[in-house]
Amino acid sequence: MKVVIMGCGRVGARLAGQLDASGHSVTVLDVDSYSFRRLPPGYKGKTLVGNGIDMESLKKAGIESGEVFVAVTQGDNRNIMAAQIAKHIFNVPKVICRIYDPLRQELYQTLGLEAISPTTIFTDVLKKRVES
Image 1 (cartoon, helix red, strand yellow):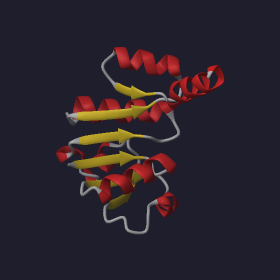
Image 2 (cartoon, helix red, strand yellow; image 1 turned 135 degrees about the horizontal axis):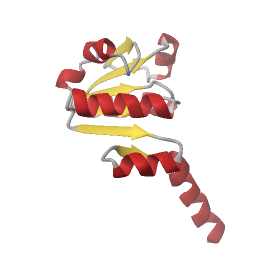
Image 3 (cartoon, helix red, strand yellow; image 1 turned 180 degrees about the vertical axis):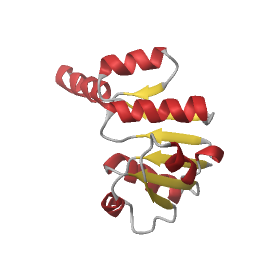
Image 4 (cartoon, one colour; image 1 turned 90 degrees about the vertical axis):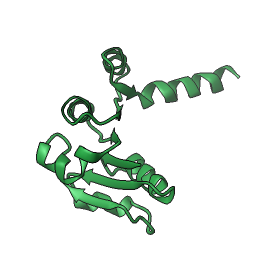
């Protein structure tokens, strides 16, 4: 499977490493080349310095033939915008977007964007621990 990951923070780097180790073709896109240091030593995928809301950067990352696009930068707005571009302009079959704000995550989820809110997930985990 061909995967493009926007954002090489802790989550993006870990996901890229795991998918690469599973045999997938992975390209990681980040605005800062220093972020690629987080990738595991055995990472065989591609890295590209660029912005995921820039059409040329996305094309260089291989979005046109991508099967999955994952947006996991620190910015909700960039993640949302890049995910919309991947889904509606490049017609990537599977687009996943991290949105920290639970209200925005719900809104974009109802609009058809596969959005995950770590805030909601972590709150649910903590609530279960508190109540157990």
